[in-house]
Length: 406
Image (cartoon, rainbow, N blue to C red; front, side, top):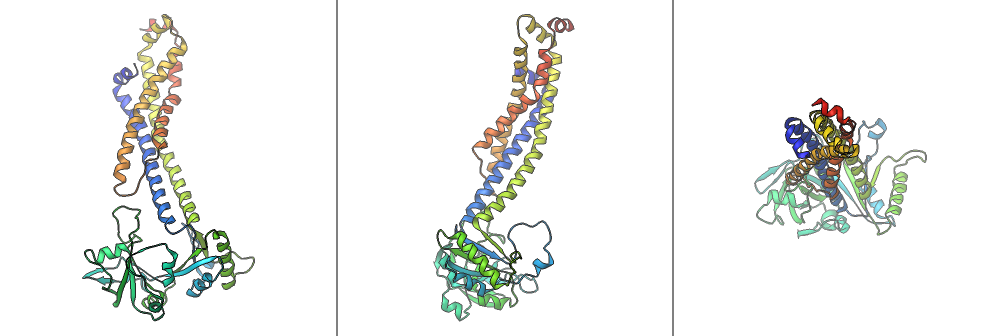
């Protein structure tokens, strides 16, 4: 009977089903994209180590307001700061990272190797202790040594993306790479790490980078200021290590007792928490937007059912005349409204699965087990919310008046 109602009001039913379908489809797509990106980002950040601590000149995270003059005037972090942090009892190892991708004028530093030229390679200077963090594995060759670092030898280690771009068919170890006109010798290549965007190893990918001794990097950009410090805490001493770092840097940077930190410090867990707070806000906003489609679908369902009550007045009267109770008529129309929204929900689920499959070809996405269940139950609920008025109107008809009206 519910399907007959759909066929009797094809246009109105199609519009009602379409609204519910779009709403459920949007919820499904949002859930799969956000959960997929959350999984990928969490995995990527956790690869940096559960005991890793990141120290920056500025506070980490997305900012929606301009930095104050006082923030912009903060002192730069230094290699000496990294050495001092490394001597703390709660720290296993501490290494600096000096970003020299751009020269002092903001121009991208060119990298030339094997007949190819690129300005999209991330260039950073660090120290040999980085390999002791155990955050990455050398797949070919070795990391540069303390001797090479102390004597400022122009050697470098490539990440997998840069190695693939410049040397797609041969090992880069032992090959020459020109960076800003200086000739560097490749001594090692890092093992490939999972990418957030499948198949992408472009300029925004972490793997498309080259590491070199920090003092050699400073020669490429003498006034480089973009320095980050990576510290790895001793197992089980992450909180203690953070407190020690804060106390040390406040002392070294002469921060007053009543003044806030003039540096940023974060851990993998705090980075993940910050990212999830952003994705949660985006998810709530998108769900609110998608609920408009569900609202439109619900109003359409109510309209279809009111039309159905008008068209079937005599049928309702006949049913009540031969013994149908008000509750029987009420449930009949509620089932019909839930059938309409349920069909829209099933179509939305199908489109959601297809969308997840397509999106997964470009960005990692994952369909959570509860998303289809919530989507379908939401579509049924729309029928329950918008169906009672038409159902009550049908149940309240007087059988004699209803039959006479025909």
